[in-house]
Image (cartoon, rainbow, N blue to C red; front, side, top):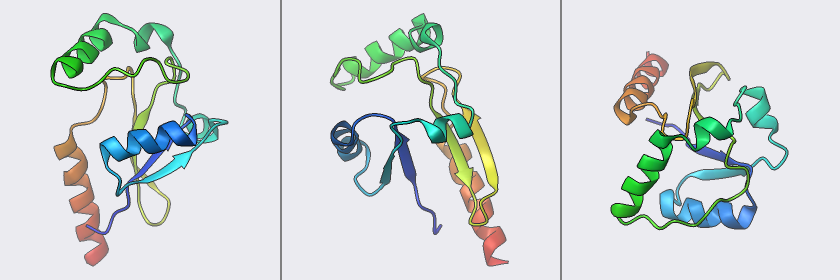
Length: 122
């Protein structure tokens, strides 16, 4: 679909590379130690939401499924988000996460990317 996935983290470059290797080494990684991108996209911080019962349950599920716990890396209260930005720089999807488990469905993201790809072709 002629898209580029960019992952943004405020963690160290070393930890970022380790994480990226596990997730998908084909993605591009940007290190935002000062969290300028986080601020620009209004990504909040909340210790209560980061460590809610829902979040802890999800981490337990992931560990039961074989994911390894690495402990807390950096600021565990910082929320993330998912964004789709078109070639002109227009934000087409903004999903700031309410908690670490709050992510848009992959099929929703792919459907939007397909639609944008079709718009570019026409």
